[in-house]
Length: 420
Ligand code: SF4
Image (cartoon, rainbow, N blue to C red; front, side):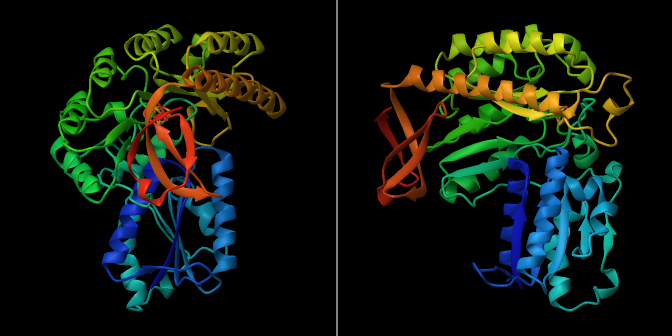
């Protein structure tokens, strides 16, 4: 069968799609070529915001337009959370939930064998989120250079604005031994950079009685020329021990991504986050002391219920003074099923949410520019990527500065010492 696989959302979705794609190939199916009609389209969706749901619906229309005779299968977070809404779209044949996602290869085999799936059309197969307890190891290898290695799934935090625990289930992981084996496999296939990926990766070990730091240490003991980045880690879980470990490790890049979400303690309480802004500042200062040149990206949300003008101003002041490199700004959207909707708090009008988001984006651009300028002229090691245009290629330094250089095919997926 010719399969078109489209993935939306986070690194975790990409890791899972990539593993499912590999399994489909191993079963004799293949990717549809550019311009070639697919027999089956699989859409792996995201549902982190309303905009993500909208993108999912647009992708369904597009896939059907491009592949009018294809069977359309929709899976992922949006499918788990709103299966009826998706099944109501005439283009959609099957809606598969989080557990069912990992049966897609068998399902495609059934389609090929012409098992009578016709009577399943418009079928929703979505387990209750309480039953979503299996862990499926995955890693992406679509990019020749980088690998998103899934190390954890699910979340037990239930922040008041977030639907993810209802889409991905409880926190769980594979054990250290098998996770390191996955990493070795990716490295054996040529990956030079591993990005540890999950929903709440600092929570690693909950289901196996192990510790995240021990996973980091086991990965660091693997020989070879490669580097590892820790993707988003909750500030309460990013301990000083982990920061010091990264500072003295062999393979870990001085690159952190920490979700702050609000710089107002009152709003953090409304969100039911598990730290104060003082703790967040301590973490950032610890990183800056241990690794002065580290890249620190911070997730910031604006416009949640109860974020008064005064709280926002307070948040902004905190952010302005925070020695970080970039902000990832998210505008709050009211999500059915979240606890936030039951809080009797003032709703920030959408226009005001956009104004706050624009301000944060400006702050982010300034911070990123300052970070880049501060490192100009320094020596760094870049890992060159395969994408190139007009004789120029790109890569990232260990502290995540994007650099360009003259294209040389031989340099792709190799490290090079450069002056920025
Ligand atoms: S930590 Fe909070 S924001 Fe992050 S996935 Fe869990 S519930 Fe959602």
